[in-house]
Image 1: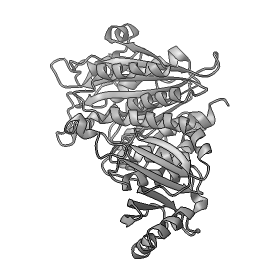
Image 2: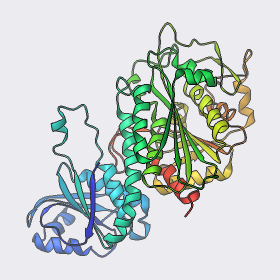
Image 3: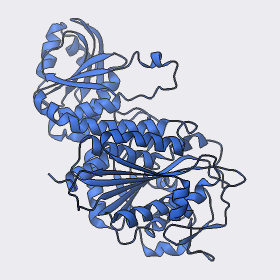
Image 4: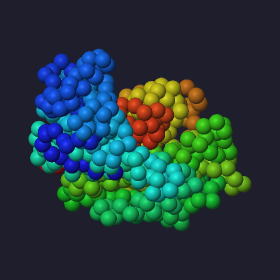
Length: 487
């Protein structure tokens, strides 16, 4: 992860430098000093590129003089509109624009949120090159250290440890989502989560016999076609009062989804390695909460399976009995994520009696048809919970859009031979999936986040590289910190 330090706003002794430049405001003092040192190179570049400081705009000046290799100007828009989200975006754009230099400086000037600029830079500099060349190759030509120059470096330094923990949680999530499925199967995923005990998390791993004993018929039905054994992993962070009910976060962890006998088309199937993004987000969130010593009790439960085709695979038309006792007619084996969640939602509710539950899953293609890749779908049985999550999404940029639910949709899940079927047809597919999950949460305040359209990005955007986004870690950490954590 990118190494961050903070220092006062003084002109560095050469090297690579990025400056954040507001729109419609007086030119930052460091800009003026650097412009003088480079005989007006910055002023000329601004004039030629018609750079005004508009949000997201950038100008790169190569070898401007005075010993500098490159200077990058990043527009941040109007100062009065420069919030946390904008700070992180600017930091990400700056880190990307700095290129493959090893060390650089980033000037924030008098703008606020210097620590969040640093967070954005860490996430913008993220890369996953584990399988490129040799380990030695991967260590070279990457931005490794960034000095953030701020008007109040002490304040930024004080805020950074908590944000650094969040950054590490996002990076962990991205790493897990990016790993190929031949490496990250359910057993390996569980082993990696177990290493988080070093942060103070309590980690418990349920193997197949343990899940059989608990009656996880829905989850195990998905897993039965794979040679990779399933796992359920429970992470607990006890940072609140002893008797406080925990917040529960539940994640779908299908480490590869072939669709089972209802097999997916070959084109694009390689993307199904990231069908475990919900579980990865819960893992990153729990690591973030532990890393910053959050004053809250939280539990993360992830169900890890591989959905494969074999002679022992679940068949369309099979009936399974879930841990809740409710039976499910499996009409489509590619609607497997809801089967995994059914058992672990029920388990989390029954074992931990949580204050609330939030599940995350790359659950339906229908949510992409509805919302594209800008928003994740939000479904909930509780207006207060839904509102709190949506508010946190606006702050962090992990945006949510609340979708409807209602008993009218339940008729689509009616089965002739079981308590329900696992699909309701094409109309309202993401809604009927949420209605299905609702049957396993009882009266507990619950929200379901369908992140199928936001867990992965096919191109760089908003200062972040393409690939795994880590969507949900900052959202849920902010939700916990601002609305449930005790001061």
